[in-house]
Length: 344
Ligand code: 2U9
Image (cartoon, rainbow, N blue to C red; front, top):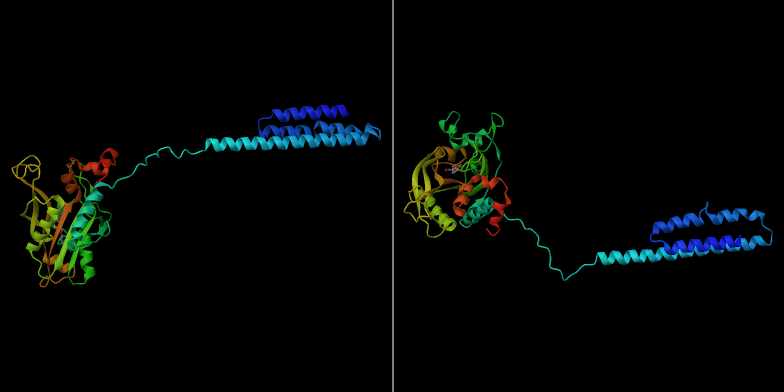
């Protein structure tokens, strides 16, 4: 029996020595030291031994168990140390390697243009006002001197939600709402940037959703010359000092008189080219003196107060400034287009 135990010990120690994983060691522990293992089997046969032999075999069995257990533990520690060393080697960081570049986003060109225009008007004492995109018929049409069945309501095709709710076709409702808040006391000096919606077929120059910036200045003694002065400053700051402006008579139901603003063509310098359709001038916005009815509906006394208003399409400004030929580029999220505006 003693020989058998010695044999088992050597066999187990050899296997521990050869083991390459903690899992293997666990299997060896179960195989040799477990309840159904060979050492237990030997001990079960002790009944047949003499009283003299029994303690010797018992002691030997305990020694074998202890030796195998210790060698398993030692081997386990070695394997764990080796695994940790390997992990540290694999995860070591070479601090001398150059960093991986991170891809940075850029402002959308329309956002940049809006911010540039906002800054110019803020510099002239305007504040920025915003309002809801879902509007009532009253704020979008009625309060702008466009009563029901007015022919000019046909000028715009509208996305109606109910008979009274719609997606705003211009940012003008923000101006009426702001006038109401002022309760008939001037000055009101705001610009209103935001999304607007029209039931247009999308093509190179039309989009069913686009960006507008409108402006409104209401105070005592505001005249057409104030409008012209503000436009002159705005155009020179946005397009460049060398650009000239001219006002051309027009018609809008919410302004009287109304005028279109033209800017001298930068491409031909005024002599006429394809961009300016041989006129030397490019139309950039619509404007006019606020109609007395509109002032009255906003809570202002037209006998005391006068004002001017204007509206521009942001995409058109961006297209003119950067030579973009299709409005759909702004809304298709093609990064080849967008990434060109990194430093705008
Ligand atoms: C109030 C009073 C008057 C806003 C104005 C225009 C002229 C205009 C167009 C330019 C290109 C819209 O984006 S576009 O299609 N706008 O020509 N907008 S005057 O007049 C107002 C607004 C609010 C209370």
